[in-house]
Length: 113
Image 1: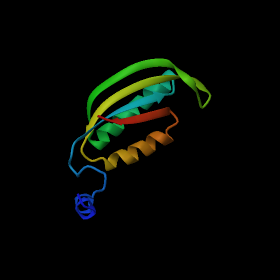
Image 2 (image 1 turned 135 degrees about the vertical axis):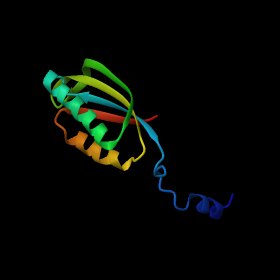
Image 3 (image 1 turned 60 degrees about the horizontal axis):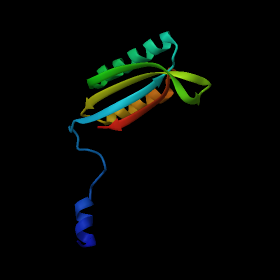
Image 4 (image 1 turned 30 degrees about the vertical axis):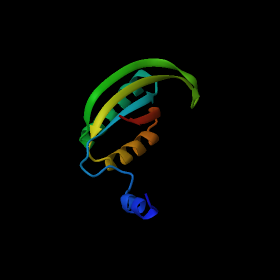
């Protein structure tokens, strides 16, 4: 295979799926363990999902657990896991920015399914 044939194959490739392609993700959130903060954070996440038109496939409250190391002087966290489907991934960028700025979300991680 020559360089030109490889270049033609990859020319225009953006690394993103085509618009309208349904993508599946799993999010793991570590939330502030105080009950009122946890409830508020979960409600905010669900509200964002509704606003984005996300289909929630699976939702799991794993409960309060001890963290492996202290994060922001917190030794416990409330684990919340969701599996979602979305067709417009550009909406996820704004959502993730909001999660990074939220005081109730200690950490979160996105995995492509």
